[in-house]
Length: 172
Image 1 (cartoon, rainbow, N blue to C red):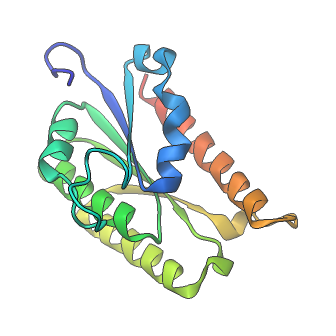
Image 2 (image 1 turned 90 degrees about the vertical axis):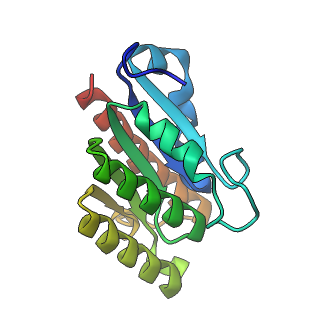
């Protein structure tokens, strides 16, 4: 892990399946050399200590955050594991005065009321913590008809990727 005194890092953490896929491209050498460090955290990674999305390695997550100058947390809102981890990370960062931004995608309405309710609750909770939250609302992307759910999710990923790039540029 990088030491703060050796190099100030702008950390991007992706939580949950969709967000971890999204930031894979940011793990390239050119991105890290631009003084940014991207890490995927999903239910398959070593940061999880069990099968339940609430059972993740909080100490490992704290260590990642402690080494960062600024942090962008990326999550697809509406899921259990990503929501739990991003809430913990935001609470920790805010309490330790680590500048933090959260980028989250709000699900399409056709993904179900439960996911939408979880997403809205997560947004409210993160804002109450004091995190700077940017929301990409999937429903606002449906200006054209998509031929498939896959096509709709690809459009959402593209909108999220644009926001991640914008954040990374602003932190240079």
